[in-house]
Length: 224
Image (spheres, rainbow, N blue to C red):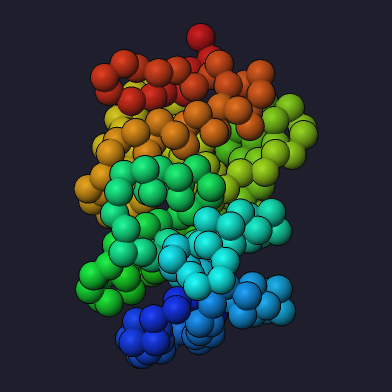
């Protein structure tokens, strides 16, 4: 049974999420503030995904996300009443995997949770490696090395890199990146993809030049 940590200060929202998640077969931990949520996170190494509210009474969701990302790559879905584009881009830059704005349908949240868990852990039983121009991806362990040196990628960065390698030499549109990596129709700004590509390039070091920008369309991985 996969474990979900819900960090949300609104009691009614906590109860709704807990009920729907449990009805869909998940074990659920609920925290009413950031301090308790961080304690649960530190004391439960088997948490599969975190649903994190941005507007917490003690610690901001942004600060909590930064702390989590310093220690773990566990998927994080941000939940908030704020829907500005800046908030979404900031969340993704800090390592969030998804973003849902209140009010929302609990069924939508469940669908997104399932999609994230499937992308993150569903490939764990796959075997083999994918390599290209010194970049090696181990699908089973979700580890990446560049010229033999391991680099740390967020789940979204890993999935983007794998998508580009799987389509090496071909142009991958921003829309395809969103559909394949985020797993649902994204109604935000396509610059979300650009932000993640920028971060991915920085982590690839000298190999960043392999990711070519195709202006007005998307990106492709090309050694030429």
